[in-house]
Each structure stands twice: as C-alpha cells, then as structure tokens.
Image 1: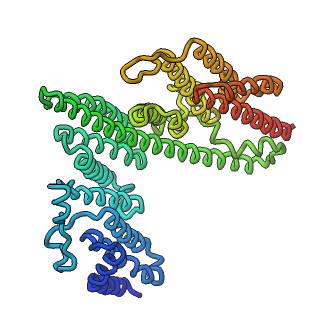
Image 2 (image 1 turned 60 degrees about the vertical axis):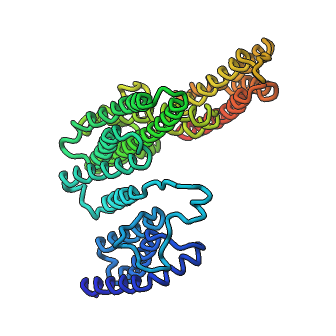
Image 3 (image 1 turned 180 degrees about the vertical axis):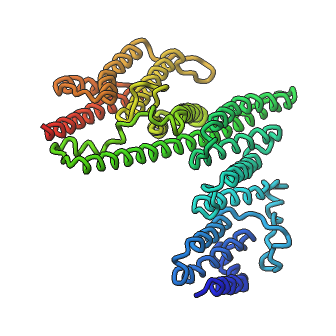
Length: 503
C-alpha cells in the first residue's frame, strides 16, 4: 500500500468513527448510568480511530517509524482525553438533546446551594505537556539534534506545566504565579539539557539549578507575608489565612520535592550511562592491546574483574563531561529527602513507618569527591542504613522525653506522666539496641568481616527490648538490630566463600 492510500484509509476510518458518535454516546451512557461529558466522548472517538488504524499500520507500514510514532501519539491523546475529560468550546459541543449535560441540576441547587466549580481548562495544558514530552521521547520532535528546538521545547513545556500548577493548586496567590512558572521553566530546561547536553549547557546548567533552588525560600516566605498581610485583624480571618497558608506551603514543598527527585534521578541515570560507556571504551582498548600482543590471560581473577571495570572509574575522570553533575545530584537528593521528612511531620505527625518509604531516596546519591572522599559505589547502601538507624534512635529519644516530660492531659488537668523508672528502663533498653546498629553500619561502609562470636554475643541484647520496651520505636529498633545481625552474617559468609574461590 502506498502512503497516500494509507492516509486515505485513515481518513475514511476516522470519518466512519465520527458518524458513529451517537452510538458511542449511548454505549457510554449505558455503561456509566449518566450522559458522558464532551471530553470523554471526544476521547473515545480519538482512541477508537487510532485503534482502528492499527491493522493498517501493522500490515503495510510497519517499516516506517514515523507512522508508528504518530499512531502512538493519537492513541495517547485519546487516553488522556478519557482520563482528563477537559472542557470543549461551545462550537465543538455536540448539538444533541441526548448529549446535553446540565452543569448543575435542580436537586443539587436545592441541597447544596450555589456551587462554584473549579476551572477545568488547565487540563488542556497538562495534556499538551504530556503529548509534547511523549513526542520528544519517541523522537517525533527531533530535540536531540537541534539545540534551538531543544531550548524552545524545554521552555514551552516548562511554561505550560507551570501555568497548570498555578491554576490547579495556587490559584489564590497570583503574585507567585510568575515565580512558579519560572521555577518550572528552570526545572524543564535543566532536565532537558542534562539528558541532551550541548556544547554550552555544561556552563549554564549549574546556574539554572542555583536559580531553581533560590526560588524555593523566596516563594515560601513571600507567600506567608502576602497571605498574613491581606488577612484582616479579626481572629477568624487570621485563622483561616493561617490554615490556607499551611496548605499552600505544603503544596509548594511537595512540588519541589518532586522536582528535586526528578533532577536527582536524571543525573543518576546520566552518570550511570557515562560510566558504562567509558567502561566499554576501556574494555575495547584492552581487548585490542591483548590481541596485538598475543598475550592470553591466565588467571581467572583477572578475567572476572574485567567485567567490573566501571567501578574503578572516579568522578575526577568525568571533568570533561561536567564534574558538577555528581554534586548537583547529591544536593538534589538531600533536599528531596529533607523536604520529604518535613512533609512527613506536617501530614502524619512524624510517623516512624514513613522513614522506611523515604530512605530509599538516598540511593540516588553519587560518588563525589567534594561530598565525601571515601564514598563510592561500594558504600551505596551505607546512607540508607545509617539514616534509618539515626532517625529511629532520635524518634525513640523524642517519644521517651515526650512521655516523661509532658505526661497526660485530660479535662484540662495535667495528671502527670510515667515516672523515672519508666524513663530509666526504656532508656536502658534503647542502649541495648545500639551495638548491632553500630556494627552493621560500620560493616556497610568497609565490609570488614566481624567475628561470628561477636555477632552471637551482641544479637541477644535485642531480645529484652523486643519483650519489655513500652515504646514501639524501641521494639522496631530491636527487631531491626536482629535483622541487621543476620544480614551481616550472611553477607560476610557470602564474601568469604566468594573469596575462597579465588585462592
């Protein structure tokens, strides 16, 4: 089939689906029990048109990548219209009595009164952002070849997504809209040019990241100043303003936590790919030198180490590609983790269970001579275990102090809390859980083998804390210490067996 014939078939299929829109509407109404919105109906029309063209593309144009990418974008547009259901202009609405959907029925007005609907037009901006990103990912838009197009794409995506964020979550603070759009534009430019660097991007990207970080305290403080200034002197107005300010600040911190995680993940992926490319280049050079000299390796240890050449590279060898990347990635990881801890305090009151979900963020840390001289790929799990132990110990001390110092308050009377026996007992049980955590964290740093006798003597110290502790955090520390001891024994045994094979 020739291209013009395939294009004609696609037009015929699309027109056929459009003429069946009444049937599609009735099917959706029967399925949902209510008339579908214009956006939902349009989404199904686009999706069915794209799916109907799949056999044509699979049979006649499977060798043309552009056709398959365009078909993927059409299907993605249909799916996004179905899930987002954006509003359509009046001229695009279907002129049918069956398709008329009242925005607010008489029953709603009589029960709830006047309802102010949230504007739904920003969903079009989100759809445009996702489609543009998908088009760049599938190379439909050649952003990796043209620097000007890459910059235009990054700026447009940042502006559209920034306007969407402002309209959805910060509609009541119009003064911050310019700063939010600027922050999203900086994040978009940084991510795009980190993934597709140019000759000059290595010089200006650190300044873009610095501007992005500097906008966070500015918006955080400026928002509080504006809301408290606009509030009247009345107590009710000020209380409502404080509640609104707290919600807006939490939203701002959540947005920045997501931005920092995206930046840290992008830098981690780029550094890993750069290490892999350098390892392959070094392996090819070694193979060529071996073949030219006619020397055949005799030792199995050298043969097995050749596959792990990537770990021997240091960040100093990445100076030509941008030595700032590991430092920026580490800063983004730490900021993301700290902001997540702050959100945990605000949203859950400082739940100890949340640390088990948040601590894997530290896996995004990179080897950086400016950050830590001895930190490398071998110590990548040390920040997780160390931060987990320190957080739980600090939480246990705080909860113990809170129980003893503040006591119980009921009916306006302070009836006192547990006595000093409670504090001494739980403090001693907390101290018994520390040796296993110290040994295991030292082991995760240097992997130096400890004597099995020492582990056998220290591990039972956690059992009294599991049974007798009154604070749940101390029990969690004790159970975690037992798990640490078992893991340390098994890993040490595995390393010893693996080392014996080379002897």
